[in-house]
Image 1 (cartoon, rainbow, N blue to C red):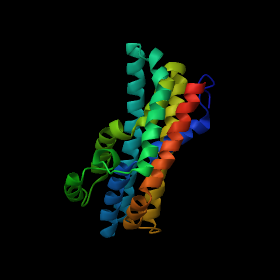
Image 2: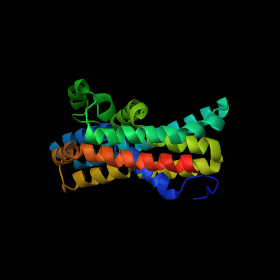
Image 3: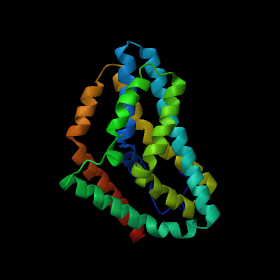
Image 4: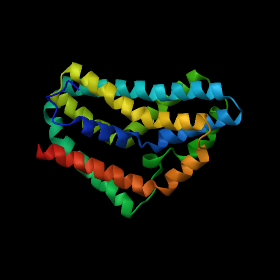
Length: 228
């Protein structure tokens, strides 16, 4: 990766992207989307809608990254934002580790609000690729303030240290990693290797461990930045 000026390794970017990809809201919507279509034996529709949804996440996240970095540079905050990036990462990490020991489900931070789920089921009865794309954009904009800590970590570093060519390279790379788990889930569902119910149950059974993994990763990233 041509970004030698960044005080962060490729593996650190991969770690941040994987932490970011543990996104219960996006996973929940994708599972509903694909399970509804597959229940109607519409495998081609499921494939198209799933690709449109995942593509929307990628494009929206990528454009959000460019917009945020541009705003930081325009306002002059890029020169000071890196000083709080490491501290913020440590705080997020400690809070996530806390959730492993004292977990309390907060709907807006862990998944979509329950009140939205019946409406979403109705909308997703037979969605077109365009509808799936629009839903993907909405989901991304909704969840970013609550689950975008890893992305904000990387964006803060890019705004202060990177050229635009480096920034675009990292954003492309980061977001490929970000959508990879969703693409894998969609593939498993499409070929019938697993079911939406099994995935949801696995997530419920392991939510505390996921918080621990997220917390340790963010804590390590934060300490890395503070110490360098």
